[in-house]
Length: 535
Image (cartoon, rainbow, N blue to C red):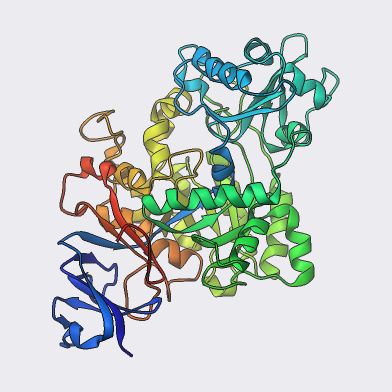
């Protein structure tokens, strides 16, 4: 076989232990044919001799090349649709948020919904949740729904509450909570998915065409930050949209799709198993939730939140219910991806997964999504049980002040990347976008430095023993991600025979100042031997 492309004069980090560094790579169609030094492969052949007549040679100009990056925990359809909503990310005060809502209200026909996301009360001086009354001042003539940064809470205005028929008499749904004032009246806050669904039921859903258009617009944003694949954990709309785009050869990323637990019965009935699909779209397993999040203090805790002696969080699934679902999923060939943030939730998931066993002899492992707080006794258990730690390094640096406020000394094993790595756990990394920024280099920077881009909390970072090396962090976005879904034979490293997914960077993140990693720019992105961004 001959190569149709030859990339030379690069600093190529293959992530292949057999040949970790190279300066040239030969590509044939959508696959890697060979890697080596300029002029010769590790087998001693001249790479130019592999080039077919009419093949192209591209000079990389000495730039750093990595395998294409995978975001292993992303809500990509939610992100894409959210680009058309009011962006409240980073608002420093409640008034700033209300100003943005009022601005959108002036541009929107009365009676039409105003949707937004990204607010975080912990960034505001008063640290209080917004209310329906607050939103009523900004948009009295529109129903309003604003989702919190965590995705585990929302605030709605009075008009939206009326449309959803949420009153003082409305009971809290199982696994959720309606915020109430001292008189029992709804405040506008809704915590966790089951409560949010009360509002979701009356919000107009985007059409298939609108969803597809939003995804097409979002793909280039992913390419520009080096993403070539995602493990998608969205629930509604996503799988149908990815299938529509795939049929038309318009799917811009390789997608491993985790299905919501509510479709488990249907999946088992028709025999859907993990791995169903192809190199562009395949089933990963079943995604479910056991608790909430740190931001709204709904993550499930072994001990109460500091300053809230009666708050142990909200269990969104009881242990026996989780065990029943897990046994059925494993029997049907579907590994679990279980959301667990609090230490009680993580312990419960570990106990259940220890009971139910693995899928396909562990080749398709179970995962815990987030693993934000572990009891010290549980740190070693993921490696012992072969459970993947699917984590988002950027959460640690973005959340550390809030974590210290509510978890205190327990933070020693919060976002414990280093401890888990030393224990031998398989770490895979993502962004949780749109909860955090899409850019994986922000996550690599956070994993390596445990600092924000402004240098806080200090030169050594937050709990510096939890820092990783650059290679460990990159593996979490490449080879680790591939192993987690049984795709290490075709993705995750630039090895002969694997898919030709790679990125070209403006700097060498392995040799430069770690604090500069966050500013990395992706010069070019290739998927399947074709440049989709830059050249």
